[in-house]
Image 1: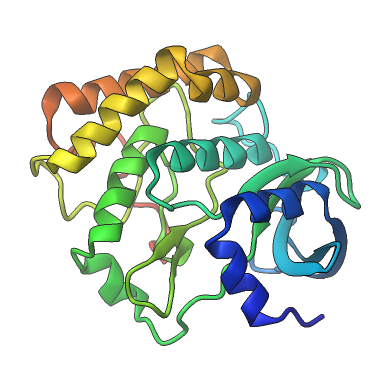
Image 2 (image 1 turned 90 degrees about the vertical axis):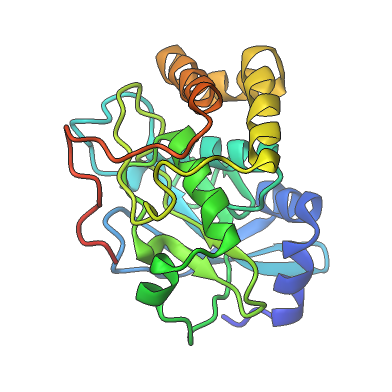
Length: 250
């Protein structure tokens, strides 16, 4: 299956069009990403005269996780997108929960990356997009931010993050390769976004949406993490109680 690159570029900058296509388009499975732990299918999606590539992860293809016994990976992937969207930081590609050829699951816009980027050099860098991602990961309690979950674009500015199925635990489980800002003061812009996020989680549409996707304890813990960041005013330090970096790191 071939998808015109022009369409993919258009959809990255037209979020509403991407979401409409992902929700309502016709999914056609083109192959399976065999390196993924859970069933991850590469698909084409079409609606009217528009087409794109996407990733479809059906719930029925998920392996049970003892440390994430509640909910589904797919719902947490969608919840991560909702938080990303609320920040305005364009971290998670457009993602929806929908029916597909193998039942309900998450469907996410496919992102073509810059294949020339050295991921090890990237994760050691102080790229501003990664700094926002480090804050985002602290908010959603990402337990698996590997280098391979970073999708740098050829523009050198945009870096997407994917694979957020093991986020939002009510227990602190932050594991990431992005510790270069630990203990550093949060930028003023980030503090402003976190303050808005706190209000949105407490009494706004984001809180209502997350309660549809997560347990109440997970939503309350998300608010608590945002409040903690605002209270301390700094990037978090690694915990001494669990591994700080996922394995493998790439």
